[in-house]
Image 1 (cartoon, rainbow, N blue to C red):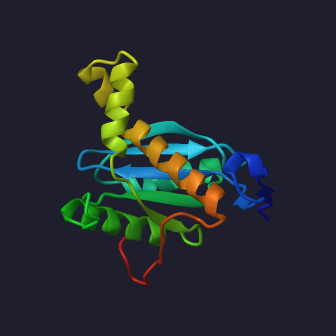
Image 2: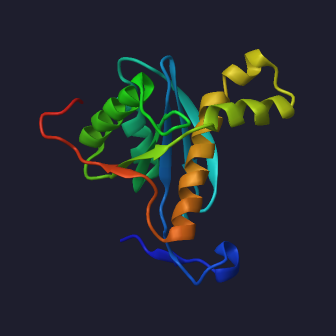
Length: 174
């Protein structure tokens, strides 16, 4: 049974909030690669995990990594425009999240706004001295870590999980 972690008021500038303990995995879905990140068992700090090639077997590989980490939740990035509109990339992320929800049930899958995570990841890596070729190999997992940290921070600040729950549809994609 997952135990909630009581956050200290000085951490988030409010009264104590419940933060669910447990490892989460973030998924940054791209057209060629999928970046993955995970957090510590207390659900406080996100870190890059790996990159999975997009295509046959990608959902299965993520399921294996989630099982190995005993993940309690999966966070999938939802790319939206600055105006909050969804385009083809968001449609693709929703479809991928639906496939994960079917494959990973009963582990919850949530869609979380990922605006700017890849841009910020490129900037952080550039400032860290990685050239464009070296950035390409780690940018997706770095973006996933930024996505996950944002979701963790939101939950810590509000006491509620970030994003929108994806409900597995019977007969959905696997």
